[in-house]
Structures are given as structure tokens and as C-alpha cells.
Amino acid sequence: MEQSRAFRFVGPQGNQLSAEAGHKARHMIVGEGLPAADLAMCVDNDEDFVAVARTLPAWPRIESALENLRKTEELHQSMDEAEIRAHQERVIAHVRRGIADLATTMDLHEQHDAVLTRAALGRPPLEPPIFDPLLMYDKPFATSPPVAAPEGTSSLPLPTGTWPVLGWFGWDNRARGVRIFGGAVLNTNPWFLFGRSVWVMGLNGLIPLAPLGFDLSISAAQVF
Image 1 (tube, helix red, strand yellow):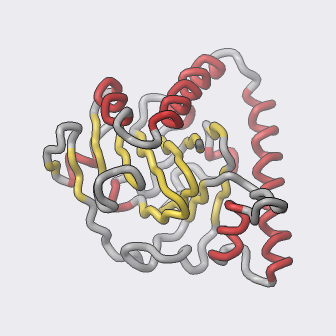
Image 2 (cartoon, rainbow, N blue to C red):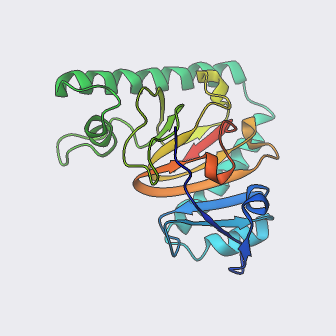
């Protein structure tokens, strides 16, 4: 069972918030770039979110992610959803095969930290990454703070890109925690429609979702 990890929830002015108030915020930011590892920045509107995000080292990538979300909303009105789903399913299947082959080569389990780190980072200059990466886990972390993938977990590897319907891969409202090598925004609704978002940043960072109020509730993701 996952041990409770204590996050400190703060508003855009640095004011302390209760966990209950933090869990209701429209946007939350956690991970690298904040003043402390246990800090969760909570923002209720888009204008304040942009003001806070501009102060972070990851702002150029966050700004690009926001533009991609805007484009995704526009495309959703006119796209062939069946075609997009089929393509995204092919991409995830390709990544899964790559990780499985690497695990076989290393003679380790697919969820072993060494396998996932090598799959995500590669071994420059001749071995590129297999995916550029977010991993979702469907079991809670065993320790707080987390130090390894949960035992017996299944995982969903997501390369860089926008993944508007995690249900296409059997992962709607399934994630309990994530491993991040970069940045991602996770949303509680398919197609990012009016849901709450948590923005996670880190290099091989392990982030439990329950203490943040996002356990078993993620339906869409963009990895950047």
C-alpha cells in the first residue's frame, strides 16, 4: 500500500492552501522547477496559470504545450477520430515492442528501472531513446517518496505528443502514479474538455497521483 506523501499546496501568490482546496484547483504544477520538491502550485484560472508558468524554467515547453492544446481543440471539431485512434494505437504498440525487446536484451523485467531509464534516455550517441517519455502506473507506489516502480504494476508508455483519449488504450481513470522524463499535462476529461489539469515536470521523477487529488481520474495527457 502506498504511504501517504505530504504535499504543500500553495496558491499563485504563495498563500498556503488546504489539501481540499488544492484538489479543487483547475491547474496544478508539481515537480522540478518549483522551489521545493513537495510543493504543489494550485491555480484556478488560465490567466494566473500563465503568469505562474512564465516564472518556471520549463515555460517555453509549457507555452508550446498550451498552443498544442488549442490546436487539439480545433481539430477535434473536424477530424476523423477513428483514424487518429488507429494511428495512436499503432504508436503505443510500437513503443511497447521496443521496451519488450530491450528488456529481453538486458535480461530484465520490462518494469525494471534500468530498462525504463535506458528506454527513455537511450545511450548517446549511437542508441537513441525508444520513447520520450511519460510512464503511467496502475498500482500505487510502495514508499513515500517513491524510489521505484510499483511491484506488479502494468504501465502505459506515452511518447511526446497529445493523447486525448487514454481509454483507447484501456487507461481511462486507471493511473495511480507516473514516471516523468521531461514534462506532461494530465487532464481528468477526454480531449481536455473542462477538466482539472496537473502539470508534472522532472527527470526520471516518480509522482504519486493520490496525494494530489488525481488518483484514478486521468483521461487525457500531453507529453512535452
